[in-house]
Image (cartoon, rainbow, N blue to C red):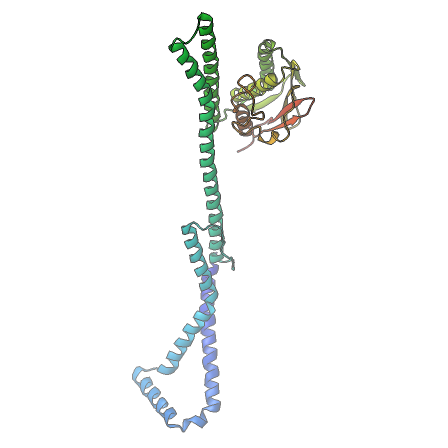
Length: 365
């Protein structure tokens, strides 16, 4: 890849050839029309000066200087395109240094200079993308801090308020005291849940996936039993329907357990009215398919694309009893993405279904 080198060599040879051609043509013209001017005094003087210089230096000085000047002019003329391209590269790097990343350098050749222009353009695009990602990261961090502060402050304010009443003996009797402490205890549990969810969400960003071969049917059957016992207190029955006795996948069992715990918790919480949650598992040639279905109120269609955003709540008016931390589904999406799987939501007036598709085999790196 020495296109530029050969281009320079060609430029010099072309300049030399043009110079010799011009000198030859000039010589022929002088021979044709020069006889009329030879008798002029100034022409005779020029010839005597040229012969004197030639005898002194040992070579024809005037033709040599004329040839050098012509050669330089030809080099400058023929190299204008290359010089223009170098100037464009310099201006492009200067714009890059100033942070002006929108204007691209025009690629006018396929030599090393053209390749450099392409690389500078790619560098500008990558830098622009990195800056945009950095701005998004900063904005995301600020939003995270703001949301965490808001969600933690609400139960903490209640805890402080009720404990202040207890500390200042602002209660009538032991029954009211117990009422205050129960509320403070419930709020502290919610605060602990928020902290745990926040820790889990942030940990997912750098926690590696420890893949092992697990039977997804056994994992889900265990969860179904656990949630059936829990659901009895809330009047909800978890019905597990496997399509096979064994569906083996390569995945992180602990993280998948957290994924389906979150989905089942969400389904049980919103399926109280129907009293039933369906948990189904099947497979196709490439994926294991898990469906968590509840028969509660539908999710608004405008909210579905935002369900997996952290701290997003489809029902902004929900209370501590009707809603979670707003991080559960974000954790689910993070874990499913880390397993190279997908998750989809379907919600109608009849049912709401979360469908998770996980690859049966670990993808090759």
